[in-house]
Figure 1: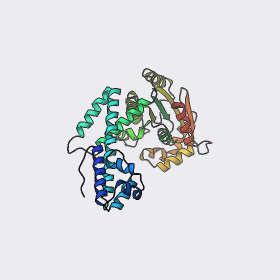
Figure 2 (figure 1 turned 90 degrees about the vertical axis):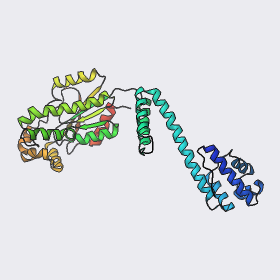
Figure 3 (figure 1 turned 180 degrees about the horizontal axis):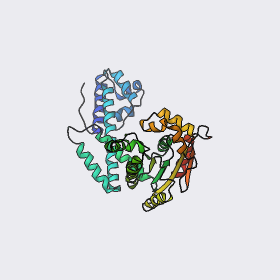
Figure 4 (figure 1 turned 180 degrees about the vertical axis):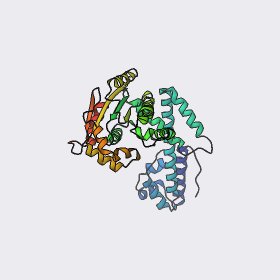
Length: 338
């Protein structure tokens, strides 16, 4: 049994109804005699056969069995359902596209570009999905009330739990997390190697004077690229020289205020034993000098060190009363009340 190909769902549903009528008549049934067997009213049979009513799959299963269609009616119903869903998705995409083109001029360029890339026989299967994600993200953002982007600086000594807190905060807020070690480690190692230094050096004068300033400048440049695009950002780094420096913090605050960016400093505090345990578990090459000279390093840790401007302190010591996730949630409520 064959069915006419139809790109128009309404015409295809009519063709399916006409096929049902032909099978019913061939089996010797009138609409009145067939309706009780199918457990539907005569008017339903008539409306389906003329394309004026759409019924669920159960109807077609019953009719297929009663008329001995060997699954042909069911298969065509399933095909029609797929065609109808695809048409609805296309219509929704067209409507969303029109809304986005009107909402932001840049979206028009994005839409044209993705459509061009995905056109033709070689169109990648992910193009439509990519377009939908772009549109959905834009629509979700447009539906939220305007709010200034926020910059959250998470500082503290090595092994205090900065990155872990940053990840938790990012998971709660959905904001971008920039971790200094993840971003700058290849740069730092190559710079130190070019200087004939140990690539894992993080304590010598050569690192502190020549490499470290470049490292922090790269991290903050990446952060402001995100902030200037309207997205909030979390930066995790020790900031041992920066956050306690009133002048540095004031300059950063001024830089943020001219852009309408809110800023919050978070200091992660931990006892020396907890930091040692974490560094041992982490077993990173950049921590080698600290672990090999622990007494010397531990003596340099100042437990009173804090940011120079108002800040939030996270107690991540071994016996802290609150867990790290609880602190992350508290910080999130401050910087993102909604």
